Image 1: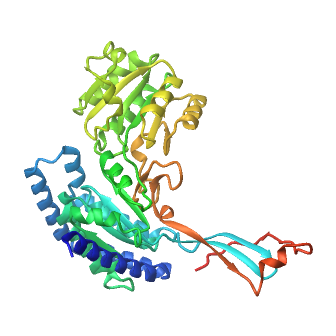
Image 2: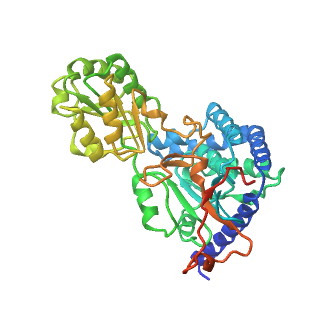
Amino acid sequence: MTATQIESHSLSAIALSTRDAARQLAVLSTEAKNRAIEAIAQSLEAQAEEILAANAADCKAAEAEKIAKPLYSRLKLDATKLKDAIAGVRDVGKLPDPVGAVQIHRELDTGLVLQRITCPLGVLGVIFEARPDAAIQISLLAIKSGNGVILKGGKEAVRSCEAIVKAIHHGLSQTEINPAVVQLLTTREETMALLRLDEYVDLIIPRGSNSFVRFVQENTRIPVLGHADGICHAYIDKAADIAKAVEITVDAKTHYPAACNAIETLLVHQYIAPEFLPLVARALQERQVELRGDDRTRKIIDVAAATEADWTTEYSDLILSIMVVDSLEEAIAHINTYGSRHTEAIVTEDPITAKTFLAQVDAAGVYHNCSTRFADGFRYGFGAEVGISTHKLPPRGPVGLEGLVTYKYQLTGDGHIAATYTGTNAKSFTHKDLGYTNSL
């Protein structure tokens, strides 16, 4: 047996144990899952120093390797960030259980009753770069939704992820849930092996660069959920409140520039550009943002020239491209051409203009008079998210608990047969909708 075959065989055994643990988890009560979530929160708190020390070692190694600044920003986990992540764990515990909800409860005929009931997907394979706190969010969402999860973090976060998963396993060991429901992979070879495990893994969620997500999509038969780019825009309309527009633009670019919901391009209506651009440029440059503009922008403010490549670039850094447009229609056309269907915002006091923008822009999130930085599962009240999907089909946008369940049809009869309802003397269905109750 070759090394590759041994690796694949070993990972198959891990995936099988995860699937078995997930099947046991799928039938546990909400109370049992919530007790496990609290146990994990307490374990993370107890092992916080160990987790932060592991992250410090990862950061030191990353600095030595001179990794990209945006990647380093996502890697760094300080005490405040860890505390917030643990608070997010407890928030997930407070959320309604997405499993066992009755979506359809219908009598087909007397004694023949159909229900459509939500249930876990099974086993998730989540591959992510840098962000070790993602391991916490994803694990807790998987447990609450009744799924097993196989995590594969980037090599730059190996120590951090190992410390986090160790704490999660310790917490689960005090509960009814088998710790095997959460697994961690650490090598690049395991990534390829994971993508081939369509027998055991039900959904792959990649979180990383455009090229990486494309690679995953092209190298697996397992369904893939995720987004490749975060090319977000803010459009400042001719009817914008200028003070409001400056504040929103600065937040959307500088609050956390490495995030996928930070804006990369600013579109400004030509009518308001002469007044707005000098103000926003000053505010952005005070925060060390490098500005690039088209020809019309550069006639108003002194900035570097933008190129065609800038409209298709996710900087994930303190860089912003600016374009002056003639109309709302031109802004929408630009966004629908160059955007990544992630999150797009308009700043305007004209409700008709806002309504048109929200209806015609093709994105998972369309915002009016607020920062694109709100595109986040925690801020939406999901507790956390496993990622953001820019697919047309649901789940779309930040994916929380509801995006991690599917449903099954359950039909209960009393000797009913299909032949009764066909032929010359066929009996009619009643198709009577009944009341909705939780099935668990």
